[in-house]
Image 1: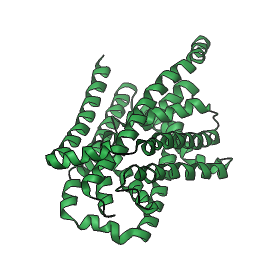
Image 2: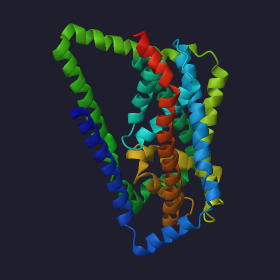
Image 3: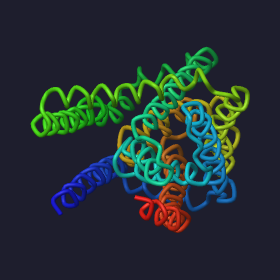
Length: 338
């Protein structure tokens, strides 16, 4: 009971923080600006915006297949649909608590595929390292092509002041929560089992994570692994680039503008649960460098964010239900075996 109450409080605080940020950013707009933003959203061609969830599901397919290759390299054969739906649930959980879904998808595979959580986490961490390397490469190419234009964002006091409200959350609060959580669990194990058992548990978990991190050395289909990675990031880029066609004011924007939204929007997504209150501001600031009015940029960012959030939320709820139904018999058989 206490654990459920604690989880509810964490969820409420995290979601409340995101809603607060959303309210702060919208509250700075004048009534005329709000009206302009609303009218822009209403006039959007939603057929183009519907490509966002379609590309999102395709990117999840690629991420699922890529993750399966890493898990196979450490000796496990997870079924595709269990892996796919666990990835869908990851994005659902991240709407409420940033990065919580990363661990959740590993525990789901532990439940339905009997894959040790530490090894799953190791492969997940490797995935995220590869993602970081990829986005840095994309950012490098972007700044080589558009550096002068994008660097202006850091020179504009009016826009940097608006964006300066959230970074300290990522820099301090989230790391502190993680440290407190790890410290609490470690102290509990230490007191309950003693120092030697604590060291054995830590060593065992570390080795499992390390094995997962090394899994890339044993990937049996490196070409397919690479193609899934490329396809996944093309989907992420397409979410912005094709959505530009939804508004006449943004329809002319180039592939570089789409790449800029990918890079800056991606970092904004981790600044608050589901990017609420941060994603659309980051996108708007990027688009001002391409001569798009700030309020038009906010309308575009809100539209893209709404479609992404709706897809992640509905996809996550469906995935929970489908996973339970798909694995009902398998779980029953496993319990009988025990």
